[in-house]
Amino acid sequence: MSETANQEGAPAAGEAPKKGKTKLIVILLLVFLLLGAGGGGGYYYFVMAANAADGEEAEDHSESKKKKKKKKKKSKKSGDEEDEDSEPNELLGDALPDDEDVKHIIELPAFIINLADAEEARYLRMTVNLGVGEEGESKEPNKLFITRVRNAMLAVLSTKRSEEVLSVKGKSKLRKELLEAAEAASDEPEVLAIYITDFIVQL
Image (cartoon, rainbow, N blue to C red; front, side, top):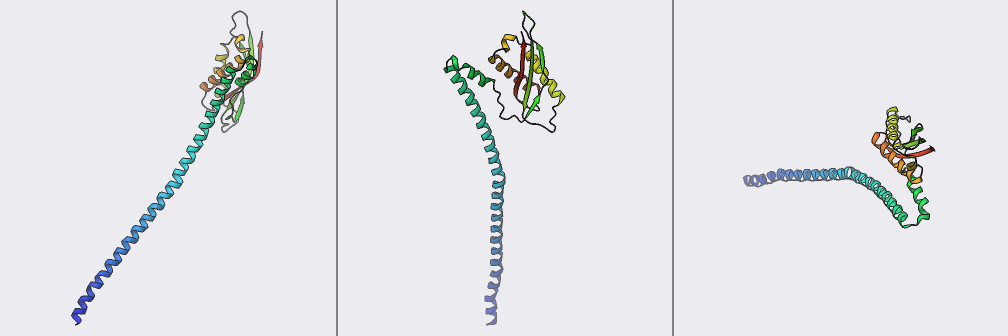
């Protein structure tokens, strides 16, 4: 009797460790699954949400640029369709610089230039201010920056004749050419707008 009781008790003792090991493996698997899910969720929240926010900012910026371009196209179309009486308003629109992103103004020394008139010597005295994107560490502009920008602008101004720059349209065209020259001359700080604050032609 005692031998049979011992034989029946032996398998029960062997099954207990097996059940314990199975439970431990299941618990460990669940813990790893939960940790993996938590890590994936955290990654998505912190990384993907940040990328989405950056994407929205870039989209907003591009939309504002598109709106500006549409406005310019609309004003050009409406200017073409309107009669000659509305011409001064259209020209005034062209004369206004696109300075939404300007953060700081740099005043340049006045230019005094011999214009390219062949029949008679004519002079232009002009003061220009630059609208730049960022102030940088110091508000005082770099001398090299000023010299490069003035040099580029002088190259544009010295090719002009008095008849080209006296009209409102001519000044607007000149301002755009000066902006292109300033942009090409220097990368930092970025020149975003040109303001003509003084303009005298000696006739």
